[in-house]
Length: 308
Image 1 (cartoon, rainbow, N blue to C red):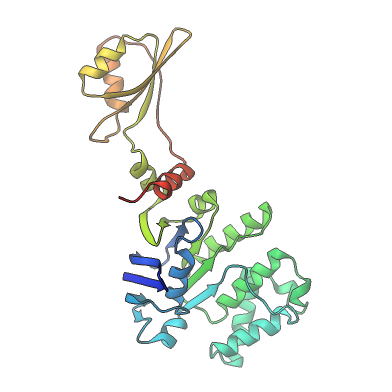
Image 2 (spheres, helix red, strand yellow; image 1 turned 135 degrees about the vertical axis):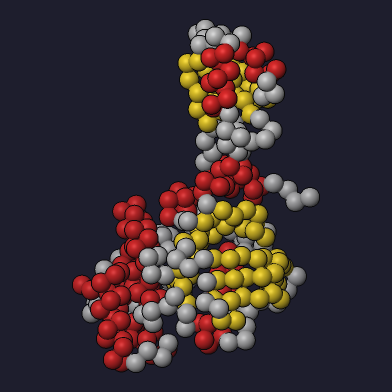
């Protein structure tokens, strides 16, 4: 649905996006994560055709954004960060204006208006001035504006920024519902948001993609499924583990119990293997669990590491 191949964009001497390649499948929700200035917004603006790359290729729905920008733009709905709106307009007027700008006929607009108003929940405020609406409703109006021409792709830049917790949950559910019909690319600074809503997460740092995959795949990438905590009644299990090719990363002793943090070079799940070792050597195994990694840890690890 979306394809970027070796895309680079500079602003003077600053390389904002550096040789980025990415593929987004139809119906996928992709979350962009990265520190401020990492290149998220620039990448998203190039997908929309708002900015052009200095080099590389971008396709949306099989259409080349550089050679056929008008055709490609009709396939994209864009909610920019801070959601600039005409506050003296009503949502109805603003959506009608957006429809005209996107060559939507008046007849088609009437059908689309009901659909997007129902989906975004703005039916009750269509005739109120936008300047009187809450932040949550303004975000919904912006989203309705992005949907009014029935695009195949939604590009959402910080869609939950400034919303309260209940509004964030509501926006998250709305995006999930929209992804049943649309491909969604969104940026966010909220780690839990990306983890809960995204099928795939793309972490960008200094203009480069440093990691991509599902939340589960990123966990494995960061520390692996091979790290396991093992708690036994005594320390005698240490020699058994070491002689079996398992690396003991840490040992803690408390109240007659010993906790081992162990790993293996081949990064396989060790739990069944360790259980059988304990049984074979008559070791009382009290607890065992895999190391869990938060998305915050992964993000910090990948964005704070110095480049070689």
